[in-house]
Length: 80
View 1 (cartoon, rainbow, N blue to C red):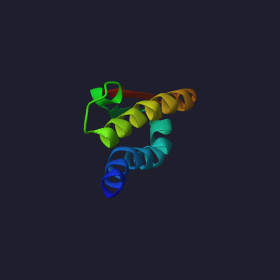
View 2: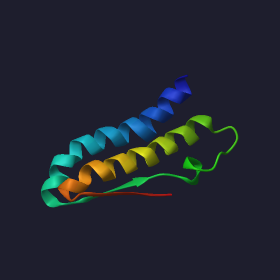
View 3: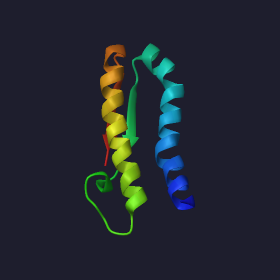
View 4: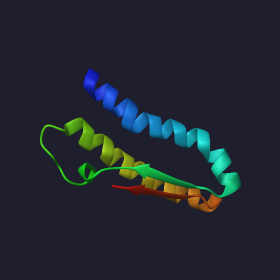
């Protein structure tokens, strides 16, 4: 569980927190967000359960943010 907590904290919580902090400025400047995902978001690799889950979460987070921030003219994308 410690490894799970560490990976989720770095790969998911940090992105969520930084996005939350940046949105006011990005909305004002009509900026962009580019998240870093991985092929592991859609392709299952053995012995990497938590990493795979964290990158899938980033892809879903990116899609949700893109929908929610479109009205503020903030583009949100991810690269794999």
